[in-house]
Image 1 (cartoon, rainbow, N blue to C red):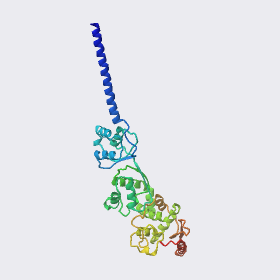
Image 2 (spheres, helix red, strand yellow):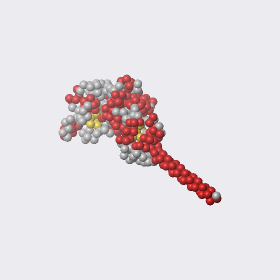
Image 3 (cartoon, rainbow, N blue to C red):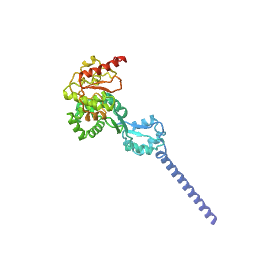
Image 4 (tube, rainbow, N blue to C red):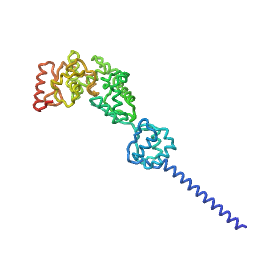
Length: 351
């Protein structure tokens, strides 16, 4: 009887040990199953960023992830996305990927909208069309959407601009923006920067020369196009302000080039001077209706801090240094002009 009891007890213990082992294996398997699907490395090195466009749903995002090979195992990603309820929390944006990221880390980043900002820096862009195209390469909105707002009188009026002068609102600088920033929010951000730039002190400086901030920027665009060197900008600005005060036409060659829309012109010929355009300052007195390029901050400051002089004429120097010869009277100006024309002829520059 004792032997039978001992045998029965040993069998039970073995059974329990095996049961525990099986339960442990099952638990370990379950943990491994969930670990690999949630915490195991899955993001590949095929893409640096995942772009999710505004309005996209989970199926479209999943298709992008599959097509671009963003994860090594799409099945586990899809399983984790559903279990973490990401399918109902899709947010547009530009998301920075790191090789070896887990499904959980990737999905948490996407669901929280934790995207990396885009650094956008612009300067010296001549036309609104160029500006819209440049911005569309950095942000989600296409160039047409941006240009439509630039040309919308109703939209830009709320910021105090017209389609002709709204380009003065954009100050060259470096900006951090989210990739999916809408055109409207982009304008709002640019206007906030414009308001920050035009301090009460700068506004007073503009008033002292009888110009509005918009007019300062329009004149600055001409100064910027005329002066190759920043150190000459205050002198050029002072000359144009002298002409405005005297009621003289600005007769600025860069405005002719803008009116003709041929930016390859190196020599402004008489035939161009009759171009019928409100930007032709040889025909019209005062400032043109808008800037002829995006003015630099240096050019704006040069107008506000112009150099006082009696100059009313200028002509590019004959040494092609980018500097100008200035004059207070027509006789001296004609001497300077002949020098430059002779230099052009020597180099066979006809256009």
